[in-house]
Length: 115
Image 1 (cartoon, rainbow, N blue to C red):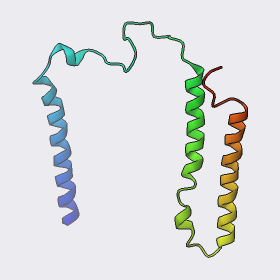
Image 2 (image 1 turned 45 degrees about the vertical axis):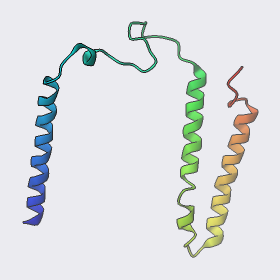
Image 3 (image 1 turned 90 degrees about the vertical axis):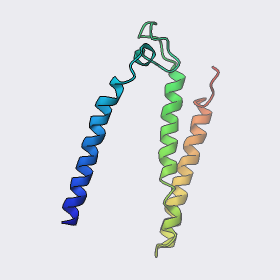
């Protein structure tokens, strides 16, 4: 009974919010709201503007390092493990891989913006 009541209330609330979202935009319609907005780009310019490859490389590098650092986040929780030497060795291996990849990026001039 309790689950059915919660399910019914959530369904009614979701339907009410969907009805409001379809009804509300029709109240205040003016020209400025219907114009396209693209951050930093002119909407009337050609669509195939050359994209700087540096932005792409920095974004990929950021994603890789961010993923590696995200793997380090559970380390404080892992200190409660019974096999502490294995945890320390695996975390040190991950940190060494992170440091070596950063050094490789630095030596290959992957982090330099100016060419």
